[in-house]
Length: 423
Image 1 (spheres, rainbow, N blue to C red):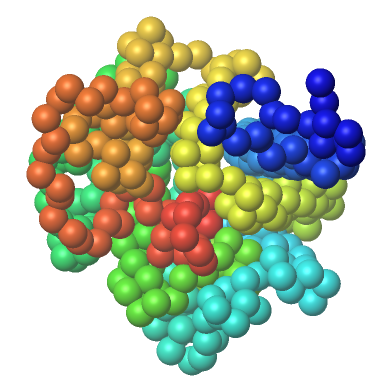
Image 2 (spheres, rainbow, N blue to C red):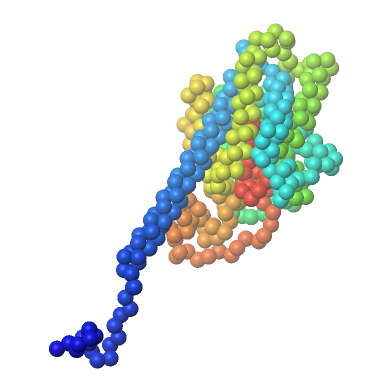
């Protein structure tokens, strides 16, 4: 029987201790429920944040593709003998409009110009930057824009866009010549493949124009030289400009250069390929010219925001899709015709360019080869095959021939994406 006094004897093995019990079981349960609720709230908050970010990046990506395609299609529509076939005045209007609006935007929202306002990334705008960096680039940029828009008089949007895909090879070659790039067999073979696919698109052109080909080819030489010059004059001295800062500094200089060019064409050297408008032409087409300039500036803003919020892979894939949409818009909306050979060649161009830009952007992912690298970048390291032997890491060096081809020489920050993609 139990002893008097209320004390009980433990039942069980002689030396076994009783487990510790909480002083207040209901309090422990409440604490657990609160912790679980906080964890659930944290998970929900993180999920909502991820969904919001994905929607923002997706929306900016679509806006980037749409505005890029719209600007090129609109330029092609205007640059027509029956409409406004005047490339120099058209580009001049773009330069003036973008210069004015970017200045207003800088006053209203300076945070969109981190290269000029962020203390950590601020670039000193001095005489050396203007005359030794921005001015030579503006000269090449002006020539590039005039020549590429003049080419629309002679060739289709689809054909010209296919030619532009060869810029990677030109930039790589010029970078090697300027000692900005180390030769790499993998990059070389990928670029040879790009050139072979480009040859297919040129050979398959149904309405080939040697004049359009020459204008576009010369424009690409200007553009590739400009990209390498950016690397030499800006990036090599630690002066990296974000997209809108680039517009703010370079476009006013382009406007001055194009104004001088227009005066020469009007009063000194009239040219049948670089025609100039009458006042009647400007009055007739000013609504279209205004809308066209708005689209050009909107593209610069979208590029700046997309660069800020997206990852490198997102920007690369959006760029590939943008190129495809430009060709598709020419076929669907401008009644352009491409041959089967051109279609196959263009698909190969995009595939090889995608691989090339990913290899240049994520070299460590491709040490085991192209296929494992693609899986690692696009799907994640967990899916990458581990059976292939690792290749020696490439020698360190500067890379300005890949994604940097319109990227790191201009942009401010770590992602390496296009800053003057507006044209």
